[in-house]
Length: 556
Image (cartoon, helix red, strand yellow):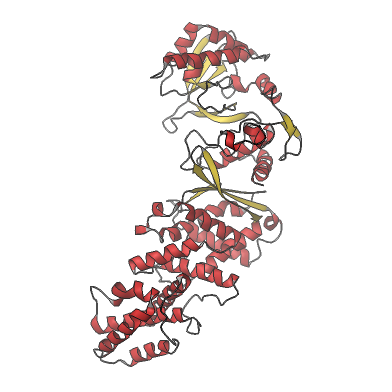
């Protein structure tokens, strides 16, 4: 399913002028230095394509790079300076010589009728010319390519028409022919799949989405790609698309926790542009972009704009995470644009809870997750939590149990329920209740709520208010001393708190309002439970938060 969707995006991107996809057998690569030759193979100059803005050099269309491990494998008609020009590197000059010899041998063995290839062969046979070119190249083993002087500046030897024609003939004459389940046609089966780059935390040189590097992973004596037989064409298309989606500056990638999320639709839709704003931190130059996107999405769903052609388009979300030399699929969600919009809106509806005027109107996922971490730091969120939560949002499933547990743990540790944490707890409980046909939590105070745990939270907030009215600001209130135990073992704590409240009531000039408030809540509580399980601790927290917000509203 994943590879099918990626190949489908390749077909869409070919007709999109804003997406510059490489043709079969090629890729876009930064080439800092271009060696310019005449048609006789004489060295004319070495062009430095770097600039002060992009020190990596201009991006050129080059033949697809080979997948290397420890073996010496040269690329076709371009490579690093070590391969192409025998640039010495510290540690192993003999290996450098072997790499350059392999590059020269591969070029010499090419049976391609092309003036550029012939000129490059003559150049590589001239050791003095190679040395002269090498002396003009600087840096730590940069990429080097070749160009004929009267060709256009963008046409390297490796992408001349003759080379392109040869690439179309396939590069592995000894490959295994078989049926490709992605294309549905017979094709040469890819032995190795290209590396995928851009997944945060993975190797900078790229990691494999599909690989079999140990005999334990092989079946029936097959090796490498024969265990997952996919045609060369489909492998090129899915890897090219995935690398394009993940490249720096892509509008189709977002980071959520340790997961790198890529998303796309079968056809360009507004949701593609808005999607990252619901999950990631907003750009520095537009801090309210996420709030504006949520408002626009609400309006679009309510006004029926996601009905019709756009709504029926397929929308895909792929979550990737590093796993040694491989990439693991953290989650995969496939839905229509309309379904995806409804699910995201439902997520924000579930989060909706009373808030102060200075609190954020729409809470992005990164802020919700940070509220469950020590000191509110995103880098302390458990690795799998972000991916599991994102999948729940996009699949309209229950939030992971560990999300509620993490939020409650922070409440108990800090004796505080800020707006993001309260919204998260409310969303977890609301979604669970909806899926188990129970009454959902309200946005604000609900005095008719049937559960005792909710009213225990309200009672704790009321007793805290009474204490504050009687004694003013304290170094340690009942919340600081008793919140954790009151929310988990009410029977051991509330009798003490009620006795203390009588002392506090005696200090008030007028205790009518306090007696009425506490009495109304006590009427909802038949007995103090010995223990509260996790979900009821969440209800306690929401009851406390709702009651506090009602006090603030009363003051206003």
